[in-house]
Length: 408
Image (tube, rainbow, N blue to C red; front, side, top):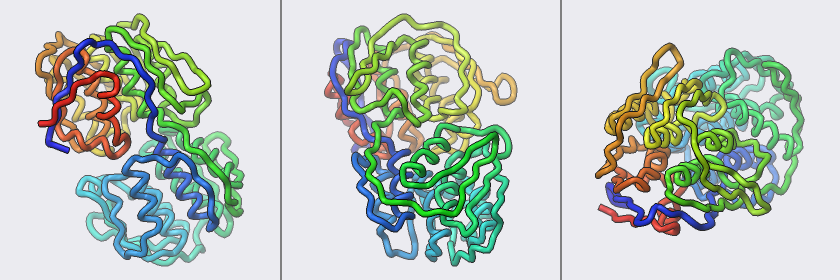
């Protein structure tokens, strides 16, 4: 795809049904668990997202050097997978991936008996993974305020450890629903676990083969909620979403009810309709940090004041998402500032709706979070191909509901 595209919508009226991509969070966990089982499992509706397609390829690869590209779950899950299976691999990624910390996970795996060496800067990929002794500790203390993916990576290999694992989570637990998603999938494939207080216990046991169908992606749904909130009129159906979901971003239903979107659950998914929105919000993104960009972009456009907490993990994502948001909302005469430690305030200004242009910082969520503003006036998105990471058909789906897209 070209270096930028221009978006506009002639009427601002949205109608239609959209088949969302499958959840890469569910798909990538199911792929790792299936591989750890050593048996063939039937996995249906695997995500077309690049992260999932990449993980499928890498799990089958005999190469000594494995490139996780820019995929966080792929890097973290494969680090634990290769360690427990004793595969001698060098695991690397993009320049940005090699700037994202992995020390918490590596130190935990070393304590369990893994041999892992840093090939560059201490605490960061690339990693050289060697033999697994299996003579390490059974009880681990791990920080849980950095990335829930570290916790999930350890949990998925836990039943293969000779004595299982007792994992004590230290500090505020970030993205807890994604830890619970991991435990739920482990249970689906025959492994029991106990999560009480801040401790998760998994006994030594075997995964079983199972059939599993991946749910549609609530993260992808969030952009459609934003589109409905900004449309003049809207009646959008999103297919394949479940009312009772382990995905943390299911929280978008309640957040968007306050921002002008009513959700009606149906047999086929959800139907989105417009309603009045509030003017001031306080939101905690601890369980759903991937929604922050969508909400910041939308509230800037709607003129809604927001106080936000739970954004700590955004600093180590595909980009420094807090800094990227601060820069982009500034171009919209708005400000996003940390008013006290850990508390951010969005102060919307007077939005000039002509020729808005947004940089994406090699981050798929930046592109999709700001695209809905094209309902207010022409928008240019830089590096639009970044959406391939999680929602490759995003631009095509926008065209289905009347957006006019010109590649530059």
